[in-house]
Length: 257
Image 1: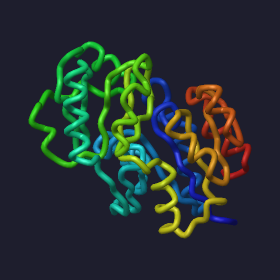
Image 2: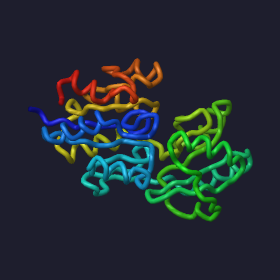
Image 3: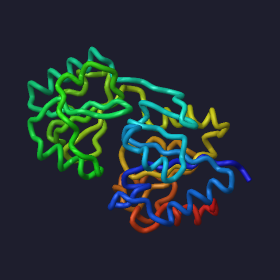
């Protein structure tokens, strides 16, 4: 048997719409481990937001903040933070254009503005995340990710002025802001090499824009049935939804469990 690395996005993939892990998914992960495969999470969430999930599933390798940091056996193997000078400039721009901003490190997040609390709260609820505390001084530190709360109407209006950052939309009202030249796949390759696994033996599951690169570059990319059509179009396999045992169904079809 060839050892595989099976990689799961979290929201919309590993978790159901109720933010729970389906029983079939838990059983599938346990089966993968019994067979000697490696399991890794790759998420846009920060590390502190997945601690309960890591404990529940006994997973010790993970990529957080869309690839800004990667851990193998709970040891950090890669990290890249937001450029502080560019971040200061972006903060000033957002303040001048009435755009809310949340900053995140590996251990927590804080909002540094309070322009539209209802919008921020409703957007973050889609992740099962509470509105972060307000702390305007929080910007003095190292950050792996930021959340910009603006609609698609102003996409591509200012991003070229900030080449140090990558802007990835995950919600109609919000984008992830990460260091340029990082991605889930960028960090995943580093983790795979340490685990002794080639790209052809990586199986990835995802549903969002931030999953497309790893779906297309891994040996087998599997899109969830609840993902957008353009995500499904690039996958090697489309499974059932995150509410319909999609992970279990795909692994059974591939005869991995």
